[in-house]
Image (cartoon, rainbow, N blue to C red; front, top):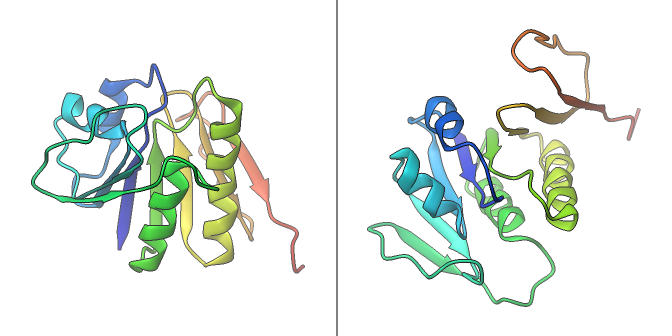
Length: 155
């Protein structure tokens, strides 16, 4: 099953999110990412966060409240929950922002997914990042910039 995670990176392109999120996927909002969902007209099925960057929302969906002090970002908790629920693919939006620590850990989510056999990518209007074990066809004309990691672990 495909999962989409909408994170809360500042200044993310709502129009891009609205146009590119697979509406048939299981949508999880990470903390303030639910605000992007509202703006994009997307109803999340689950919201996970500590709600330190936004108020705890009132939605007709499941909400998991995390402690403020924790080891992983809210987005990483969303990725772990999607994997736990059997995700085969995860697309993450609004996850590249002004905080390098959050952006880096969000990129580490991709390796976490790779190790579990889950296809995962972080996507915004200018970039797409993913990690893979194998050769892939890269579509150069869709994204001006992309980040491609070929995992050499266990090879």
